[in-house]
Length: 223
Image 1 (cartoon, rainbow, N blue to C red):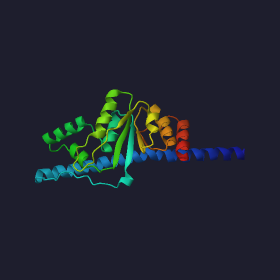
Image 2 (image 1 turned 120 degrees about the vertical axis):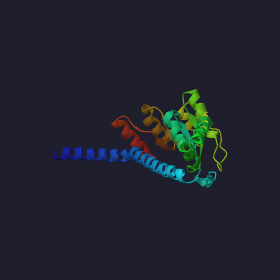
Image 3 (image 1 turned 60 degrees about the vertical axis):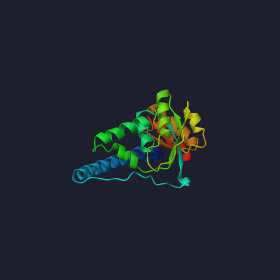
Image 4 (image 1 turned 30 degrees about the vertical axis):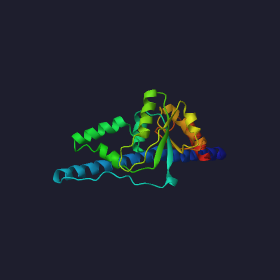
C-alpha cells in the first residue's frame, strides 16, 4: 500500500514538474506580449498629448547594426494571420502592408502603427525560408522577406519557398523557425524542429493532449 502511494506521488510530482516547465512557454510569451501592448498604449497616449502641444520634428529612423556573429536565419512554417503578425514583429512586412499603414499615418497623425514598425529594434535576422500550402500566402511571405523600407536597414535576401516543412528543417543554414500552423500540427513540427537542431517559437497551444506534452518535453530536453 505504501509503495503504491509513493509511486503515485512520484508520478504526480513528475507530471507537475513537466506541466510547470511547459506552462512557462505560452505564459511568458503572453506576459511579454501584454506588457508590450500596455507600454505601447501608454507611449501612444503620451505622444498624442504632446502632439497637440508642440510641433514634432522627427529624424528618419536609423536602425543600429549588430555584429554578424549574432545574426539569425529564420524560417516561417505557416504564414496565415498569426504567421504574418509574428514575422512583422521580427522586422518583415509585405510592401502592401507598409504602403497601407504609411498612408494611414499620413492621413491621421494619431495613427502610430507605421512609426512603431519603422522604429522597432533590429533583431539582426533574415527570413530565408517559407513553408505554406497556399500559394498566395507563400508569395506574401516571400514579398515580406525582401521588402526593406527602414532607413539604415540592410538589403534583404529573397526567402526560398518549401512545399513541405521537413524540407525547410533540412536546410542547415536556418537557425530558428516560427511555427504558426493550425494547432494540430504544433507538437509534431516542434519535435521535428528540435530534432533538426533548430530553435523554435511555437504559437499556442503547443500541444492538445497530456501525452503530446510529455513527448514534446522529452524531445526538447534531449536537444
